[in-house]
Length: 96
Image (cartoon, rainbow, N blue to C red; front, side, top):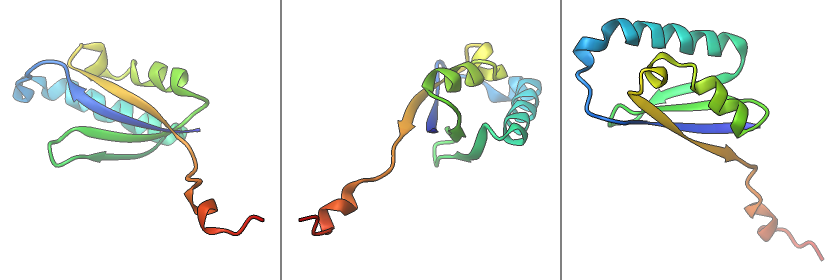
Protein backbone atom coordinates (compact mmCIF):
# COMPACT_ATOMS: atom_id res chain seq x y z
CA UNK A 1 0.00 0.00 0.00
CA UNK A 2 1.20 3.52 -0.79
CA UNK A 3 1.45 5.78 2.24
CA UNK A 4 1.91 9.55 2.28
CA UNK A 5 3.72 10.90 5.35
CA UNK A 6 3.90 14.65 5.94
CA UNK A 7 6.31 15.90 8.58
CA UNK A 8 5.57 18.67 11.03
CA UNK A 9 7.76 20.18 13.72
CA UNK A 10 6.48 19.75 17.25
CA UNK A 11 8.31 22.77 18.64
CA UNK A 12 10.68 25.47 17.41
CA UNK A 13 14.09 23.93 16.74
CA UNK A 14 17.50 25.52 16.28
CA UNK A 15 18.62 23.17 13.51
CA UNK A 16 22.20 24.45 13.81
CA UNK A 17 22.37 22.57 17.11
CA UNK A 18 21.03 19.37 15.56
CA UNK A 19 23.64 18.74 12.86
CA UNK A 20 24.56 15.27 14.14
CA UNK A 21 20.89 14.30 14.48
CA UNK A 22 20.28 15.47 10.90
CA UNK A 23 23.15 13.29 9.69
CA UNK A 24 21.64 10.31 11.52
CA UNK A 25 18.23 11.17 10.04
CA UNK A 26 19.69 11.15 6.52
CA UNK A 27 21.35 7.77 7.18
CA UNK A 28 18.06 6.36 8.44
CA UNK A 29 16.15 7.70 5.43
CA UNK A 30 18.76 6.18 3.11
CA UNK A 31 18.37 2.78 4.81
CA UNK A 32 14.58 3.01 4.35
CA UNK A 33 15.16 3.83 0.68
CA UNK A 34 17.47 0.86 0.23
CA UNK A 35 14.97 -1.45 1.95
CA UNK A 36 12.25 -0.40 -0.50
CA UNK A 37 9.95 0.93 2.24
CA UNK A 38 10.71 4.54 1.29
CA UNK A 39 10.00 5.21 -2.38
CA UNK A 40 10.28 9.00 -2.60
CA UNK A 41 11.25 11.88 -0.31
CA UNK A 42 10.86 15.62 -0.80
CA UNK A 43 10.89 18.92 1.06
CA UNK A 44 8.04 21.40 0.74
CA UNK A 45 8.69 25.08 0.23
CA UNK A 46 8.47 25.38 4.03
CA UNK A 47 11.14 22.67 4.45
CA UNK A 48 8.77 20.02 5.76
CA UNK A 49 9.60 16.49 4.65
CA UNK A 50 7.10 14.59 2.52
CA UNK A 51 7.64 10.86 2.18
CA UNK A 52 6.01 8.26 -0.04
CA UNK A 53 6.27 4.85 1.57
CA UNK A 54 5.29 1.42 0.29
CA UNK A 55 4.32 -0.87 3.16
CA UNK A 56 1.52 -3.06 4.45
CA UNK A 57 -0.55 -0.37 6.20
CA UNK A 58 -0.49 2.82 8.26
CA UNK A 59 0.52 0.92 11.40
CA UNK A 60 3.67 -0.43 9.75
CA UNK A 61 4.42 3.02 8.31
CA UNK A 62 4.14 4.58 11.78
CA UNK A 63 6.44 1.92 13.22
CA UNK A 64 9.05 2.70 10.56
CA UNK A 65 8.77 6.46 10.98
CA UNK A 66 8.87 6.27 14.78
CA UNK A 67 12.42 4.90 14.48
CA UNK A 68 13.71 8.02 12.74
CA UNK A 69 16.08 10.03 14.98
CA UNK A 70 14.12 13.30 14.74
CA UNK A 71 10.92 11.50 15.75
CA UNK A 72 12.68 9.68 18.58
CA UNK A 73 14.00 13.01 19.90
CA UNK A 74 10.47 14.43 19.87
CA UNK A 75 11.31 17.15 17.36
CA UNK A 76 8.93 16.07 14.59
CA UNK A 77 5.99 13.81 13.88
CA UNK A 78 4.26 12.65 10.73
CA UNK A 79 0.70 12.80 9.51
CA UNK A 80 0.24 9.42 7.87
CA UNK A 81 -2.30 8.93 5.10
CA UNK A 82 -3.15 5.90 2.95
CA UNK A 83 -3.18 6.60 -0.77
CA UNK A 84 -5.83 4.77 -2.78
CA UNK A 85 -6.19 4.56 -6.56
CA UNK A 86 -8.16 7.35 -8.19
CA UNK A 87 -11.55 6.06 -9.32
CA UNK A 88 -12.93 9.26 -10.83
CA UNK A 89 -12.31 8.22 -14.43
CA UNK A 90 -15.16 5.72 -14.15
CA UNK A 91 -17.45 8.76 -14.33
CA UNK A 92 -16.27 9.30 -17.91
CA UNK A 93 -17.05 5.76 -19.05
CA UNK A 94 -20.42 4.59 -20.26
CA UNK A 95 -20.79 1.59 -18.02
CA UNK A 96 -24.35 0.72 -19.10
